[in-house]
Image (cartoon, rainbow, N blue to C red; front, side, top):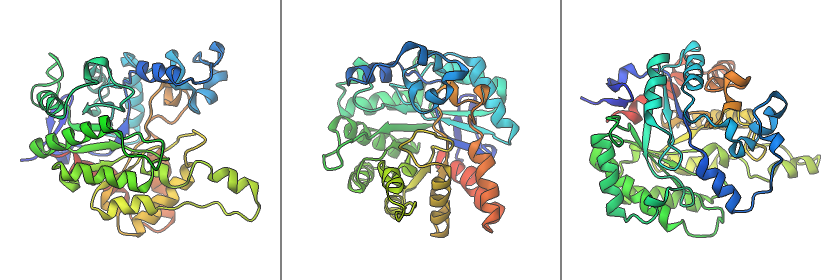
Amino acid sequence: MSVITTVRGDIAPADLGYTSMHEHLNADMSLMLALAKRYGASPVPAELLSLTNENLAFLRDGGAALSPESSTQGDVDFTTAELGYFAKIGGRAVCDASPIGLRGDVRDLRTASERADVHVVFATGLYVADARPTEYQNLTEDEQVTFFRREVTDGVGNTGLRPGFLKCALSATDPSAPLHSVETTTLRALARVSAETGLSLHVHTAFPMSRAQVLAGVDIALDAGVSVERLVMMHMDSFFRPWDAMAAYVGDIATPRTITTDTPRAVLDRGANIGLDAWSSTVPVLPDDYDRMKGLVDLIRGGYGSQIVLGHDTTSKPHGRSYGGYGYTRFGQFVPPMLQQLGFDDEVYRRLVVDNPARILAH
């Protein structure tokens, strides 16, 4: 019988309930901060990085990645409160999509899950090539398979807590370049572990990757053994419009504002699942929620509703309800009334947030 592995133990898929499939509940952003400094990110005045009301807009627009005060790592009370807000709108489960390189202490996830009575499913895997702890940087594919298999079977370290899905990242910024070999090695390793264990494999992608690069990632994973129905390509809403689209829209009164779903459709046509998982984001280069909703509706009408999951990709305190943001509650408040207004029945939304997550996470 299939189960879903949570921080409180295995549960039946039918017990998962309404699920956000992509959040970062207890994220260790230290490597990302070091990465920003290494690549010459412009210095930000310290006063803008303090977690105060006057800084919230800046922090939500991306500044939180540089703000130690904004980190959720180790703040179990904050995580518990955010899960509680999610529970108030019917939320029953959250996927913590933080692989090694972002993953904090998984014991904190268990504590918060127990306090809030919300299921939490966490991942094993490795993040982008430039944001990995030193000891993982040179592992071969076989060594990674051995390591990830051990975490899946025995748990993380001596915690006894086992991951419920697999996560890696593709981070190409040159749309004409080949995928990073370090990252594709991890992709193959995790695909092999997925084939062995049945755990789903969730892959970070993002514009400005090209469609060809995204599909190359799909092919690499499938060739290494993952079943297509267990593969989730994340952040596919970032491909709804190019980063410079708004400048073109504003610059010419004759230019319409619209989106394209061509790249997500290409992935869906392969049989894989996708995540539309930046609901409530105010990062300027990303689509906003109306763009995201337009894309979701187009894909549902195209017959892809059984292959889509939702999330917010929250990473920091300024995004939380505790600080006046949406936390894990935006799509739950925004999407259902929009779908209803457009004539979709309740089962369409249920499929996105209950049925699809349970199918994908079951192993």
